[in-house]
Image (cartoon, rainbow, N blue to C red; front, side, top):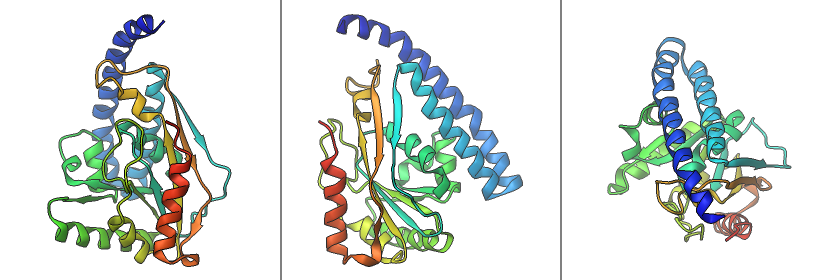
Length: 247
């Protein structure tokens, strides 16, 4: 059965990459037109549709993406969406499922160029690009980003592990970026999120991709920032996220 599954995965991976590449190339000029001619709201709608197609494209691989949320989340206050990070396939589900809250990502600067659609959205859609080798730039950029989130009542998405876990096993959470976002958004909420199984898609590398994976994004109960001191909030957020990770 495993042999048959692997054989099938080769043509499905090729087909997926063709569709994936087409989506990136197709939406890049549309984003440019929407942003430059019609402004932020038009650009956001295009990005929402873009992420919808990226999520649905995973069906080619037999990957089913499920969003689990039983809590009411306000769109009238700034949000800090904190998630574990298992791979590149975390991004589009988070963007699509939290689209109502205008998700903006804390990302490394290397992603700000060279990737059709993705780089354009990161540099023009309100996300922040930080240079990990330049702490001064990173801190300054994060402060400006945190203020931007607060002013517009948007949501900031951050992966405190800093880098993806290739095995699904969570890494130690870093305080720095999370602390800056909390400091300038005391009137908001933290939304802990647990992602499961996205690492399995690339468990054997980029080719062939693994097929038939059930990817789950689970939103936990919102935590009101004003109800905690930072140390307790950080500890509670990390515990909530990690306790639901399935290995």
